[in-house]
Image (cartoon, rainbow, N blue to C red; front, side, top):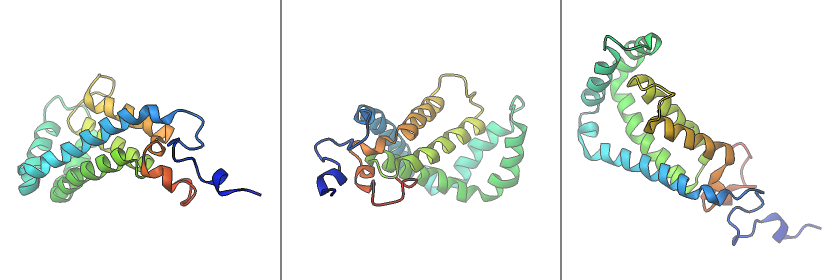
Length: 172
């Protein structure tokens, strides 16, 4: 017979039944989460939220329409999809940073938040012509989120610890 103690992870060991010491990744998770959240809050306080279309559109257009811009497929994507819907994309950038940062920092649906964060970093790299192989904040954050994604670091002192076993494994 299984007892409740064997089903529920020990709350004094926040990584529960995970064999690795996932709690060692807690500083990285907090760093990335807080950084994303503060980046989003910074945009809410600036004109990015009051004039999102003009601000984001001007920055992207300057980058994408530069003579030395190497990604022709992204230039076509910008002019065909992003530019006509710039207000929607500005909203997605601001609130995407807020929600990804909050989710990663609190360890809530960490894997999904990391996927969204990596997708955002890839788009930032392509939009602003930042090479993926060069050490940069964009690349560094994408690699850190990949590590957090693969290790499910949200189980250490995070909400994912409490969601484990209550939701489908692919969710948390």
